Structures are given as C-alpha cells and as structure tokens.
Length: 145
Image 1 (cartoon, rainbow, N blue to C red):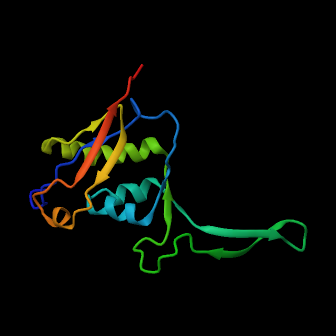
Image 2 (tube, rainbow, N blue to C red):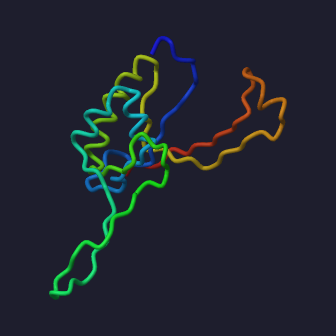
Image 3 (cartoon, helix red, strand yellow):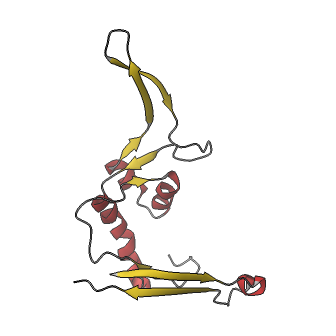
C-alpha cells in the first residue's frame, strides 16, 4: 500500500454490529475484480458460488427440462462473466482481512453512523483542484440501544 495515492477516507455503517442474517449476498464482476486486486479474489471465488441463468419449461414427458441459458452479466469484456453469491457474514469475514490492513493507515469501520446528506461543489475550478475539498458529507451517529 505504500505506492498508493493518499486519500482521506472514512468507512461508516449504520448497523451497530454484524448482521445475523444476510442482506447483501450477491457480488458483481467489478467487485470480484476489486477483491482480486487486494489479494482476496482467490478466497472469495473459492468460498462463493457462481450464478448463471438457465430457463426451464415443461418437457414432452410431463416433467421439466432446461430449454436455454443466458449470460447473467451482459458485459462481454468482463473478466468474470458471472456474479457470485456468498452469505453476508462470509463476505464481511473476507473483507475484514482488507479492513484490518487499513487500520495501519487509520481507517476503521465506524458504527452506527448514517449518511444524512452529501453535497458536491458545482465549481469546475474547485472540482479540478487536487487540494480543494469539493465534497461536503454530513453524518449522524445513531443511538445503538
């Protein structure tokens, strides 16, 4: 991470703790690539299941038969032409490896906090200035009880 550009960042989560049941268990190809870039792709792909689309219809014998398949991802240039699915706690467990490496840079997940507003400057000059702060974010700490 020493060759990365420095970006001030905060990671916030409105939940007070990890969720007991999944809410987000599908991962898109671009996110798989991000995991790969951080050295976590092999683990993610090893623990998850690929999602592919197939269509079934009644068969002449009264059962069902697969009649066609289709790409789940409509981006021909995608490195991973599929989504993967994995329960949310497992995704968070894999992500924790990355997040723990970020602690050395002062980045932690802050809970329970929610984004209440986001404003982006409309000034072209300010948006192009690498030293400007053209984004205003307002966060609210939630009562965890």
